[in-house]
Structures are given as structure tokens and as C-alpha cells.
Image (cartoon, rainbow, N blue to C red):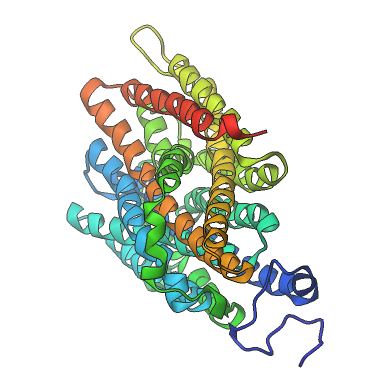
Amino acid sequence: MSHSSAPQRSEGALLTDWRPDDPAFWQQKGHRIASRNLWISVPSLLLAFCVWMLFSAVAVNLNKVGFNFTTDQLFMLTALPSVSGALLRVPYSFMVPLFGGRRWTAFSTGILIIPCLWLGFAVQDSTTPFSTFIIISLLCGFAGANFASSMANISFFFPKEKQGGALGINGGMGNLGVSVMQLLAPLAISMSIFAAFGGDGVVQENGSRLYLENAAWIWVPLLAVFTLAAWFGMNDLATSKASIRDQLPVLLRGHLWIMSFLYLATFGSFIGFSAGFAMLAKTQFPDVDIMHYAFFGPLFGALARTAGGAISDRWGGTRVTLVNFIMMAIFSALLFTTLPSASSEGNLIAFFGVFLMLFLTAGLGSGSSFQMISVIFRKLTMDRVKAQGGSEAQAMREAATDTAAALGFISAIGAIGGFFIPKAFGTSLALTGSPAGAMKVFLVFYVICVVVTWVVYGRKAK
């Protein structure tokens, strides 16, 4: 048996002995193995978010390179990846126990090269039909599904008292991919990077050239690198193996649906605002090139998510989530005062500032509500198994499986916000010329979440 302090590879890619809740095991080697898997998972998930939200940067520029799509069509392209991402999160949440975290992370990262390559070629041909972009945007949604499997996988590696922080790091830094993409994509499309592969760019009115294909192609080499990193550097856990049948009973838990509702309000808002903010800002303040600033919102939200998990480990996810929903409702109400109207041109600085706070609270709430899910389902399952006469080891094993399945399924519901929010903005603008109608719906939703969080969980919290 190896006693080396180096990362444990003696067992090979498949680890048959994994006991993170055993302090001696965790101290001896568990934390090193878990940390290695986490820090390969993080950039892989970050790249997935880059691909998932590609159209939030590409759609704004499509008409600049020869296309003639309507505003509602462009909003649709930014929204569709969240539809396929949300739907695919359900099967993706079951994949880690079926195939192993290492195998699935490598596969799910590698296949994202396909929509990136295709999109890069499609934007160079102005005769590419809208239907083709619909297909590509739906394929980008596969990237959004990676969140479910990634979070489920990481939850198996860490003991319960460290899960909030680990999931916060994985989810928060993964979410950071939206900001990274919205920061790098505008820079990449201004430079000739892939001329050897046919990227010639399109001349703009000011004489510059726009290389829109670069927004998709710059991620291809990075995806290839981290596909290999996942395959050779991560582990599969024998203790996480479970059939779909073993995982399905979690769908019968009432708390799964309540937490899905709350997570839709937090992560759904984060990803929905990320997808639709640039297009929305362009419609309200057309004289400003918002893509130079759009990355700040997702950056705030992603960093807040990382903090949200750690803060919730200390103060309790319920308390943090409740306060957070109150703040989201307040900022939603404030947004109305910043919009252009018949009597006002609107205030861009205030509009941007309020949206930054919405991004921050949505990110913070994503971390705190995810910590709630982990705590709630671990306790429910362990109490149930022990009441049925099961052993401590059996209770912990089933708790890990149920928690991972719940995290994956609830994350699928949350991702629907990525479709609903930009589509609501597009519909509201088409019907009334203003996004105010959509924001009224969001405000009411957040107020309901305050009530639900307090009634179901808040009154029981100390």
C-alpha cells in the first residue's frame, strides 16, 4: 500500500475505497484527491458556461455581419440554449452514478467542440438560415447540462460540512464562464486569429473588421485540453455507482419541488439575466456598446455564488436565502425607475448599477439555495434509512446518492430561467415597446419566494 503524500493514483482511475466523512481518511488522502478532482472540474465547467452563453455575445453582432434577423429572433437565439440545457440536465444528473465522474466529465466537455466549430463557420455565411442557428443554439445547450453532472460529481467527493464551500467554488467559478466569455469574445472578434482556417472577417461601417467566428473558435483548443485533463486527472468513484432506478425516488420528495421553485428564482435569474442583459440594454440604450461592460454582471454573480456557499456553511442557507430574496425584490422594483419612458430618457448608469445588484443577489442566492438542497436531502435520507433499521454506512451512501440526484434535477428546473427571462423581455418589448411588463412578473415571483422560504424553512431555522 502506498504511503506517499503525493496525490493518490495507486488505485487507478477508479477509487473503490472512498469515505470522505471519516476524518482520518479525509486527512490522510481524501482531501488531496477531492481537491484535484475539484480543480479539474472547475475550468471544465467554466468552459461549459462559456459555450452555453455564446449566443448572448454572438446574437448582438449577427446583423453586423450581414444577417437580417428581428429583435425577437435574436432574443430567441439567446434563450434557446437554456431550453435544451434545462431539459438535458435531467438525464445528465443521472450520468455520474452510471458512468463515473471522470468518464462523463471528459465526454461532456469534448462534445462541446462540435457547436463551437459549426457556429464559427455559420456566422461567416450570411445566407445561413435562421433554422440552422436554432439548431446550433440548441446544441450549445448541451454545455448548460454539464452543470448538473459536474455538481453531482463534486458532491460525492466532499464531507457534508465542506460540501457548501466545494459546491460554491465549483458552481461559482463555473458560472464565471459567462463573464469570461462576455469579456473575451468582444476582444477576440476584433482580431484576426484564425485567418488560416478561413476567418476573414466582415468590414464594418467605421472601416474595422469583425471576426465573429472567433467568439466560438477561441474555446476549441481549451476544450480539447481540459477534455484530456479530465480523462487523465480525475477519478471515478465506485461508491457513487447507482442505477437510474436507485435515483428516481428522489422525485417523490415534496422538498425537491419546493427547492426547484426557489432555485429557479436564484440561478434561473442569474443565467436568464446573463443571456438577455446585453440585448435588453441595446434596446433601451442603443447608443451605448454594452458588450464592453456586459461581463461585469455575470462576474459579480459568479463571485457571489462562490461566497454564497461558504457564507451559508457558516450562517445557514435558509437565513442567507431569505434575506437574499428580499433584496432581489427591492432591486427589481428599483429597476423600473431607470428605464426609458415617454417622459424620461432613462438612466443608463442607474440601470446598469441596479442590474449589477440583481446579478450579485442572484449569484449569492444560487450558492445559498444549493447549500440548502445539500443539507435538506442529506438529513431526510439519513433519517429515513436509520428509521428503517439501516446502518450508518448505508445511510451515508444513500444520502450521497439522493443528494446528487436532487442537485442535478433541481439545477435542471433552475436552468429554465435562462429561456424564460430573455423570452419574456423579447415578448414584452414586442407587445408594449418596454421590458417593464416582464419585470413586473419577476418582481411578483421574488415576493412569492420570500413568503415560501419563510413559511417552509425560515420559521424552523434558529
